[in-house]
Image (cartoon, rainbow, N blue to C red; front, side):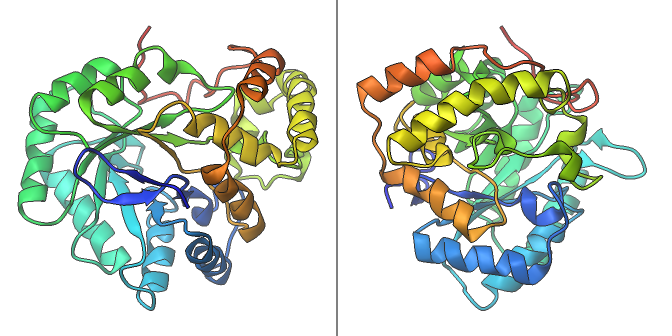
Length: 327
């Protein structure tokens, strides 16, 4: 698989990684054995970068990864995240004491003493990013983390953070139907030597071979309360995306492969971490790393899915608490 670096001096990883939120039941219940089957497939496919977080099932995702890598050590580059507290009510906490406690818990569940990349999952606005970076630098100096990451931030926060210490990666949502990073964040990452990590690059399943059927989703599925998957928005979105999906198949690839390949061609500093619990879907995602779209194909995609085509916001009001806004 094509390799790309995390930051300027971090490890090289497959251009397509694996987002492991699906291991925590966000899109339906999953057993440990099923997660392990997907992780084994990742090794076979050359998918070497795993992305997880404390809040993914309250540590379930990390635990599933930890039990797998116990028997497959040193095969993956692992990133996890902290900064969000879910109980008794959801809030953001970027204090040193809280981040340290969260990081220690993550390391324990993963069964490692060091994680390659550690993100601030959401910024706590009351704490200057410079202070948060100072905390993260301590973790790095102590050997607990290899690199510093920030998630769902604006370009101005990245610039302030990099003034303190290099940032290895910024992770924001980016796909054919979520284009905000093009308005400054992709460019800032390229300028500052920070890898841009695209999550939900398959649009939470909208660019899969079979689009989600809302009535068949589990009650806890994230998409049930997401504006783009609610009517009348969802019917409008399906009608538009169906044309793209048909085009991808006419070009000899799955819609997921084409959607991920489109993301990767936005810059050599970009990697994608589509989430799945299916080895078959993982293979479709992984194929994008070695797929180069022609200028003619890119032009046709622009016609089928013009900027801003999606009906509905990417998050509900409740879901949108935390991501920084800009532009």
